[in-house]
Length: 361
Image (cartoon, rainbow, N blue to C red):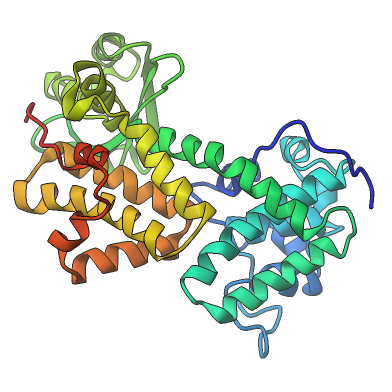
């Protein structure tokens, strides 16, 4: 086993962000990518079929092609052909000259999915993921125990990063007038307070355009006087201002500062709830996560709470970033189950923050 010393940094691999260095966007892997077609049939079957039964699959079966970001990350490093043609930044993240570090990162990414598949009782998929873990440990750079330790040491920071990203953005319809509008996303950088407005649609011929400001006021000035000013009107500027006030992380920071619901740090509590589930996926930790989701759902459906709608969307996208099957399971449970009963779990009073009505609407 090479390089048996402990690693000073423990950062889990965000496979969606990694795939973007290959030109993929929004977690969608281009099945016709030259990177994929460069791989051998054997590698395609090994790494591109984690989500299907390969007993009767063939390399040219489109179901087998590497179509998830985790499958692609595995292929991009373990294929002796693809690793030679990776973008430079991909090589920085998964360096060819540090196989121990890479096996830990990719092994932890597989283990992360495996934990949830076991909880969801997807036994067929569990077997395939266990097979990939054996492939990694058979390289003799890391053990299964080291992979699990690496995962457990890094999962909280990994989840916190995704929560921070998703709860600092809102999606909405942005209109210039009654005839012209765009699909828009407003993102706030929690580190420097910068705001980025991304928008596009039919009126931009499918192009996504962006404008940036170091504050909401600065963003408004750019919309009014900048190079894209013809895309906007005062209605557009007013809409963006209103949406900026509803960014979940911003609202929660204001609530904490003013002592709403006891001054609970909602962002940390969301991270804590998700982390507890990912460290120990069981019915109790799942019920707590479902209870959080149910509180949002109650406000959206019963109270028509505009902020809860944005916060629930942020939680939903966070869940989807972590595991789409888990997100589907939660949404399905909420829609079919007893919402009032779900909301009673957990009894921890900190969770009252997620059932608090927004008074600014």
